[in-house]
Image (cartoon, rainbow, N blue to C red; front, side):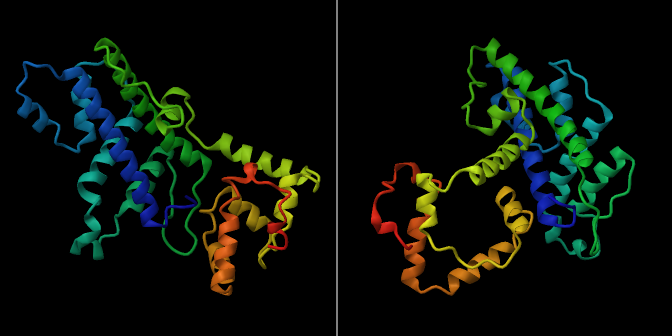
Length: 279
């Protein structure tokens, strides 16, 4: 996200955070508080809530942990979003009430950092790394507390809940303790530098060179930025679509077939084949 101006972006952040934390909370409760002597229907009914703060209070009864003001405010934020703001846009009151997802998310961060954040208008304030770290730090702290409870109680029950696939997001966050995409982004930049340094005699380069490029009118900087993060300027897609709309049906189909090999099967292509010449 570049700013808080777009409602759907703020909605996506809050929705995924709310659902993710709630699921961790309920897994922790089931592993820690459930037994065969309980009234199963009552136990299940008690789980039918979206109040993240109250769920955390319930977890505190059987687990000792510390949460600061920022963490408790986050739990209240997620609870308010899920119970009130999630469907608020469908109500008549939303026409005159502008306290939407943008407001509550930016307000949480502005209160914590003691700063004003303008999210409306033509020039909304940009989201800074300080803002990202503040929100992320609180979210990570709550998540790690819950995961540690889940891991410990799973071990006590001889369960394997925390055996996580190494390619999953959960493995990356909870076991590798990587909370940003910094490594991926820097590696993409290094790959770009490496590719530009290679001699054109590389077989893959020769194969790609045989393809006639489409005409692009933007700047090199814009295209490199798009390669690294396509969400920064999605309008560049319009240029791509315009060029493809200018092609005849067969030409477009043939080009798509060749493009499908890039990034998928390029290492297995016989680069000596002449059928790819002058594509």
